[in-house]
Length: 120
Image (cartoon, rainbow, N blue to C red; front, side, top):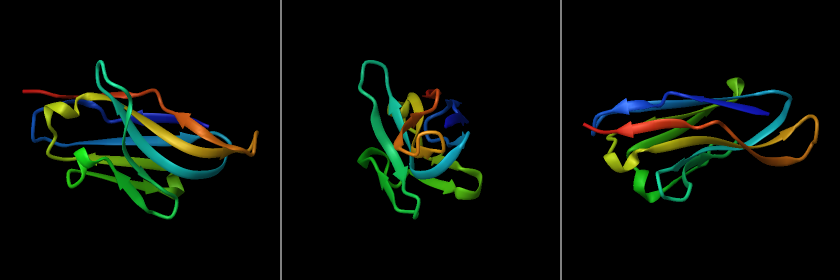
């Protein structure tokens, strides 16, 4: 299972960005998909995740500003980020808890990370 993230970039405070992450490979099942972020000098933290059935969970710091969604037909998860703040600056990592055909076991998979910079 491979995860390819895109959509990062530079945006001014108050602006918006949309991240996308597509899963590919011999996927048997995708359970939870989500986004984590890691700012310089800080630990990686959960931003949001969405379960196969559609239930979502958000970090308190992004509630009301970020929206996670997924397109199961495309094995893709999205993160719409609005009202961005300088403290949202980080590398954002896509995550999937998935079962591959090869192993038939669930495990975490990670994308390569995409940089989001919020600055004027």
